[in-house]
Structures are given as C-alpha cells and as structure tokens.
Length: 565
Image 1: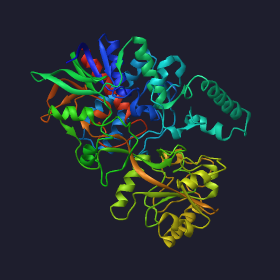
Image 2 (image 1 turned 30 degrees about the horizontal axis):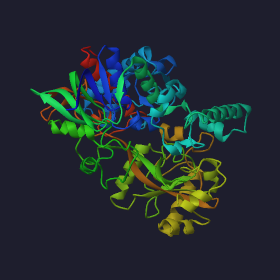
Image 3 (image 1 turned 90 degrees about the vertical axis):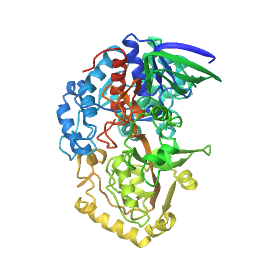
Image 4 (image 1 turned 120 degrees about the horizontal axis):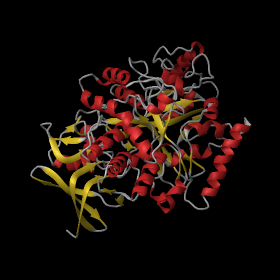
C-alpha cells in the first residue's frame, strides 16, 4: 500500500445516488470520502430528464395534486405483483416524501412538482395522472466556478446551438418563437444567456433536468467540504471477520487503502457496459446500445459478487429499463444515441413498422413498453431494428429524432443515412428493406384509423399517457393522424438500456444481502448497483432516480445510526 486513509463512510460513485448518500452522511456528522472512477460527477443521471417518481410528495400536494402512498402501493401491486419485493416497495413509498423534504430543508437540492405527468400504465388501478413526479429546480452552473467542468454534460443531441440545455417547457417557445411576444422573449432570453456563457464556458450554464440535479448535489457537497477523489475507481473490498472494513482504491498510479468505521456504499452505476452481465441478465437478443455512462462497467456488482452477495433478478428479460434510440452521425464523424422518449412517437401521423412492413406496437406507449413490444414481436418477426415512419407534414410540425420541428434543411441527415426518404411508400420500403405491399397496406389501414380516431389494432391514444404525449389540438384522437403528404421519411430504431434492474439484493436500509439473505455487515448498495424494488417494471417517470435517492438516504441514515421511518 502506498497510502492509507480512514473515514467513517466511503462512497464508490458520484451519480445522484452516490452523492445523496455522501451528502446525507455528512449532514449526519460522518466523515465521508467519495471515490469516482471518471473525471466528472453525475454518471447516467447527468444525461437523464432528472425526474423522480416519489408518490405522496409534499411538493405536489402543496401545488394541489392529491396522491398517497396507499394508492401507489395498489398500483405497484398490480404492475409488479404483490409478493415480489413488496417489503422494499413499502419502505420506498413510506420514506420517499421525507427523504426529499430532508434534502430540501438541509441542502441546495430543490424540487418542483411536475403536475400532470401520468404513470406509464395509467389504465391500471391505483395509477395517477398527476402528483407523483418531481423535477429539480434549474441551477446556475456559474455557482460552481471552475468545478462546473466537473459536471458531466447532457447528451449532445439534447443540446441546441452545440451546448445550450433545453427543458420540455422551453421547446414550445423556441419552436414558436415568432408566434407571440411571450415566446420570442423567452427564446431570446435563453439565447442571449447562452451567448454570454460561451464567452467563458465550454457550454451553457443554465442547467435543467438531470444536469440540474447533479449540479445541485455537487454544489451541496462542495459547500460541506466533502472530499471527492476523481479518476479513482474502487478496486477491491476489505473484509474482516465477515464485516466490510474498507476498500482499495486506484488513484494516480497508486493504490489507496481506505479504512472505514461505518462501511462502504456501492453506487457505481450498474453494469450497462459490462458484457458478461449484459449477456447473463438482459433480454435476447442482447441490445447493442446503452445510454448508460461508459464508466458503468459493473464494478460494484462484481465486488459484491466476490463477497457472496445475492444478485437479482437473474431471469433474462427482467433487467433492462428501456428506451428506443436512433443512432446519430455527428459532424465530427462520431456516433451518438438519440432516445425517442416522448417528442415524436405519440404525435399524430407516425407509425412504427417491423421488417415485414407491419405495425407491431402502440407507438405512444411509454419508452420502456415500446421496447418490450420490440422484443415480443421480434420473437416471431424481425422487429429489431424497427422503423419510425411519417410524412412531410409530420416532420415539419413535430420533427423526427434529431430532425427537429421546423428544420428546413434535412440534407445532412439524409446524406448521413440517419433519415431515409422517398416520394412514394413503395420507394421508401425499398430504401429501408421492408415489404412494399405490406407497408402500403399498413399505412392505408392506419389512415382509416385517423378518420375514426380509433386504433382497432393497438389502442393508440386510449390512455392518459398516450394523450399526454400526443397533440391535444389534434382531433378526434391526439395520437393518430394520416400519412398522406410526400415525401415520406423513416428513421431506424434500436432498443437501448437507460438503467438496469438487476443488482445486489438489499434490505430496506440498502444493506447488501448474501445468498442466504443475511446482511453483509458494512456493505451498502444503492442506485443501479442495488436490485431495483420495481423488479424490471417501469411504473412512471423517474423510476430509477426516485428509489436511487431514497435508498441512498436510508443507507446514510443507517450508517449514521439514525432510525429511518
């Protein structure tokens, strides 16, 4: 050993869960050290929407949205199954509101209610239309000074002008900037702020969504003087008489032994880029793409595995939390992934077809359920990849992937192959390799649904979630419109994981359990290193971040010897 340190609690990973554990532990009087494998904080959370699913939260109740943990429990019992992980779900629902209030009252981590934001299976008993989702308040990155560079940036395709963050509330004013003085003033204010930012910073400092959450946690840790070691991966755990008493960390070519008085919290982000774990736990065919941080290589899960920790769920197909993505080709020749979350799929005038040229799923389903539909259909007809198809009217009004609404020149996207286009459906079918007659028949049938507003095949537009992401000004169905105006466009769609459900089994205080479900003393896991209490289900927006932060809070409180509710 070239160096030794001793602290109360060591946290491996500086994503939202890891930083929450560190922040709460520090507030409760513990000496804390965070080790981060990369050179930046945030992990996958920094590129997320930053939404937390917290049923019964005070922020929403204060805004007039009625909800309760009891209703959410009824919903989760129907969605997940009453017997599976019910104890963890009860703990999550019971603790969620108080964990959020604790952060708000003691740190710079502040939240806003989303208001109407339906649960993803909004037709199930106990589901809510509003009140369960909260988002971080926007944050001024300039407050971080030089450490602003330590915040992992969002997905490049989600920034405009090469570096300006845009939230959902900004899209309307930006697209319709000349439609009203209010829109113009909002858009102009964003642009002027961004121009000024770029004179001093590599990107815009007005942070929203996941970047705001990460920056607020980081800023709070800085204010408390919590030490973060960057480019310092956790290498091994040290155990004595059955208890984890420390860990070995790699840093600047040397090994640091960190002795811990209270334990180690594993929050390394899950196994998104670990081929062994992907092959062991994910659905078939194992997806080629992941939106997880490239540093999420299963370090925490592998360390737990070495100590005999229980990993669950192990069944194929229950691990990924999914989104459909298109593969982008950037100006510098690199490739990226654009997640098709809610901006195009639910709008009227778009269909998804498989290799047979047939629809196979409700296009307006949640991003997770859309990909489950891809896997299910692929068992009988090649549906990975599939294609999103629209006409000229649609792409101009709503956009398609990185072809943003109102974009006049699509030549670069066509030249790169990101978009395929033709003036006839038969020509488009040839370009994307699907049966021309089947595609024509599919579009003809769908156009008939557009007249009646009823999707006989898949029920598109029948749920609150569908309609929420559709176009409320379009009738008779906000999610169904005809494809009739050439040229026609298509973009290729693949499944990608945004998080994983399989991880280390824990109890309600995030203590890791062994194969006999006994606690491994001194070892905690949260975030994507912890087996999700949702067991592969995706109840609503913020399904990963909500439990991640709640169980990080519980882990820190337990380590500090404080009883959680």
